[in-house]
Image: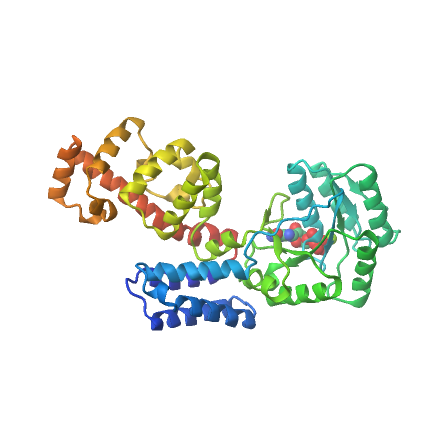
Length: 439
Ligand code: GDP
Ligand code: MG
């Protein structure tokens, strides 16, 4: 898949002490092919590759101490930009209810996503009303009612004999009267875009004046999803896109092209049939995922609850770039102690259970003083480049810190384990995430 291919390219770069212009060009040729094969729009691919090349071949990148990593950073940043840069949040009306209109082709996942969204909002204590506006598909109303019942979300319906425009208008009226925070209008789709469908959607739009018009598209349809988004946006003016079925065997192209082609942000992604399988879309996290940097950011989010933002940012950077020194190690041990067991934190990452040596990382409170002493007995050079710590240096460090050579060895081993584990963060995206996301 796309992720594996890009990771292979990045791995090659990472390993290089020196990166030439030719290396960058070669890497970008491979990136280009990987993107095209993942069904990313060819214009998007071209401008992406051009931008990365221009930035990567810039002097400060190739002349830096870690050129390979700098190039990867550029790729990561540009991927993030491509998908919209910042997370695009759901609108919130100045005066409730916030009106959300769901549109899309048949089978894209509108009704399911309406339910998921209601659940998502209700979890944030927003009272949400679902409106059954698909009067054409047999059992569509029933489908929404069943979802609503499961979620404990009220569903407004007038049966299938009334016009969708009237249902939408009265649904919104009801939400206003009853003080709902959000009202989600499910609508009918067709197999293909046609005028009758668009006309009806326009009437609904003009009647209820939604705060959000969310297009639901099936990520598995690749470029078609992007074309559908383009048409709906032209006809209706979308405020956002929900990309469903990212759990399936998708090639990932849609996620990468939608924003660039339509200028509509992806707001949510659907990752399964169940009502909890909806996540806000974070371009930076998706980029990291695609490049195999694991879900470092989710981890960091948790860490931020315990440590200050500055420290967390540093931690993130070190994990990303795998440049850990003994000074950081000491610092991190102390941070980690505040966060709770490292094991708990890592358990949220797929594949973490398989990491060997995780147990070794558990910090024994009593040992911490000894660890500190050992690290303080190292020279700055040794802290930066632990690989130079040979037998005689170990002996000197042990003496200086009032510990034994065994203690020093143990710490060096722990440090190695930690570094190895960070490498496995990247490997993890290949294993655990592959099945869940089609990247
Ligand atoms: P609608 O015609 O647009 O309302 O589509 P539905 O909501 O009825 O969904 C069509 C099918 O897609 C149903 O079988 C859903 O369970 C399924 N579906 C929707 N979203 C997802 C998703 O994110 N992942 C998976 N695997 N299936 C989904
Ligand atoms: Mg439906």
